Length: 213
Image (cartoon, rainbow, N blue to C red; front, top):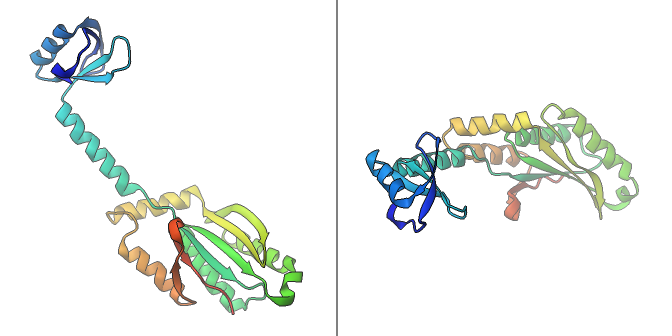
């Protein structure tokens, strides 16, 4: 920037983005001083390097504001887990489906696990039908990101929120002034607590272990 530039000549861009052309460095520095702006290298590897006339202090301030706004609107991707049994009680199913709905509305992905025990392992179609039922009943909020797959004694399906659902969650978070505030997390924990315990699932986010009886 300014006197730190070592090139003999530069391709100069004006403060409004207009192309001035290739000029000697001394001329570019004089033009910058005439309009009380800085001469900033924006493409130092070009031949000759490209420099622009700008208020560097204002540029840094505006860049910091944009970065802060981007962080404010950014929402951490969380994967939560909901565990069910293939012969789950209808009331328990509705309760856990309600948790899945809450998670999707919050913009989170949900890993749904059907746990087979004993002779249930010979009836994988029971778990498959249950997952397909859940998929159809939450289709207005999310979609199947990973189709049902047998994994040992379990069958796993991953649900993800629709783009519109995710956008609504991000907008709601931004209106509260920050990413995933404490009230949101406490609300989700309270919802899961109705059925079971809440645990932490490593780097992927919070996992709600809600295995059926």
